Structure formats: structure tokens, C-alpha cells
Image (cartoon, rainbow, N blue to C red):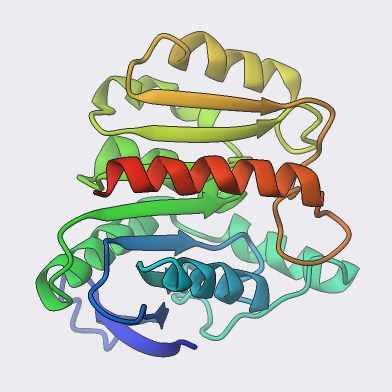
Length: 236
């Protein structure tokens, strides 16, 4: 359904790295809004492209930028293959999240200025869940959703900057986000009027992945249904 485009970075660096690739899925007819889909550590793989295609099928312009493009383009890894899982972790460890949020801002600009879509949401998974939180604190995105975001507890000092709706999906048995980190997130964000948090008792990281052993169909459908309603209300 989609195709790959190139989006200009915020600044012309002069080093030839002034655009980055993004998978774009377009709806039939005029978009009802746009949704940026931020990958897990496995790249813009079939699962992320499927999520973008699903949003396009619901009437949104869906854009999935390649987060690790400064290291390599076309990363497409399988979470169920141990060697590829470890390679994905290496990409994540080498990633500059501050530059990454600039790419999110560049994507927002591209959507609004070049595609003519004013309302922009963002949904991210795993590492992308952290990016969703960053987008809420550092950009003017209209609404953002994070699934099992890793490291949000280390960025709670930015929470006062949240001015638009943010939804977080937190599995309580997340092997990458320990209970004390989850408690810290709740302690700071539960009383924030802009933030909605849903806990998923006994579930682990990656429960809403499109494919693979991590997926929990029932929980994924519940979380995705909440996300759909959230965007319908906040991107109208």
C-alpha cells in the first residue's frame, strides 16, 4: 500500500546527510489527519509497515520514518531471531535520541507544510514509546501514544512541558521497565490532566507487536482500540 519517500532534516549539515527515508501509506481520499509511526528497535520492518497501512486504511496519512538512518538505511530485523534481536539492541545503544526527536519534528513539518495535513499524531513502540513521550514534551504534535516505552522514568523532569494529550500503555510485567520505573511514571504523571495511562496486568514488553511470539491478541486489540479512539478524539 505504501512507498518510501525522503524527508529533509531540520538543518542542512553540508555532509550529504540532509534527508532521511520514511515509509508512507496514504488513505483513499482526503486524510482525516496524520499519524507518525515510530518503530521499535527492529527498524521499519513488516510489522511497522503493517501498522502504518492499518492507519491509512482508517483514513490517516501514515508516516514511519527510519529512526536509525544515520547508522544504516533499510534496517529490517526480526525480534524472534536472537542474532537480529542483538543487532537491534546495538543500533539502539548507538542511537542519538536528541537528534532523533529533531527528525520527528522534521517529519511533523513535512506533513503540515508539504502534505497539507494540519493535525498530526504520533504512536511509538518500545524505543518509540520513549520517543512518543519526547514528542509530547519537545514538539507541538497534537497527540501522542507510547506503547511500553523504555526510559520514560529517566525523563520525568520534562513532564511540565506536556501541553497536548498523551496516552501510555504499560504492561506491568515488562522485562525492560522494572516495577520501580513504572511506579515513578505513575507518581509523576497520574495527576497530569493531559496524560492517560493504561496498565496491562501480567503482560510483558511487545504485547502489541503485529507478529511473533511476543504478541498477545486480546491485549493488543484492547490497547489498539483505545489508541484509535484517542486519535479520533484528538485529531478531529
